[in-house]
Length: 182
Image (cartoon, rainbow, N blue to C red):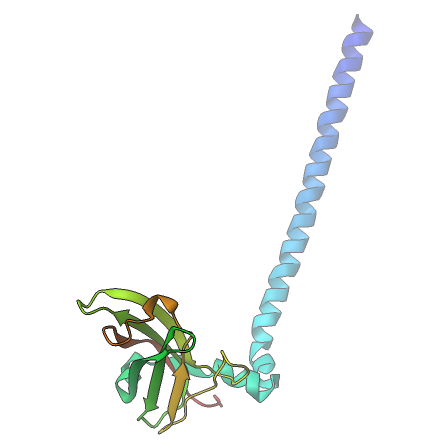
């Protein structure tokens, strides 16, 4: 009985000692990896200005703009609904004019179609200006004094109502380009 008691006690002590060793070694690994991660993050943040400087101009210029809600007063947005009788689709057409002297790098416009009672029957959000001109959805920046025409995707739900439905537009977001920071 004494041998059994000593054996169980010895196995329990070895198990507790082994578990403590594994936990302490695991904490050491976590500590060294966390320290390495913190050093890596610090070096990355320190090297960020050089990284931004080394970017190609088309990408680096994206980082040099600011939100400018006060500039919305220098942007005129008109919208009209155009019916395409052949396809039965009614399309909103935006006319956007930048009357200011800054380059608009991002412009989001919200368009709503209203019935005769002023109740919204459909709405769209369209990004009219983007930092880069890449595809149909990325139209590029809106230069000072420029006028842009944008034909939005149509709606069959407005077919036959083009005369009774009106459209309104509101500017949702404006960002202007500040140029390269020196």
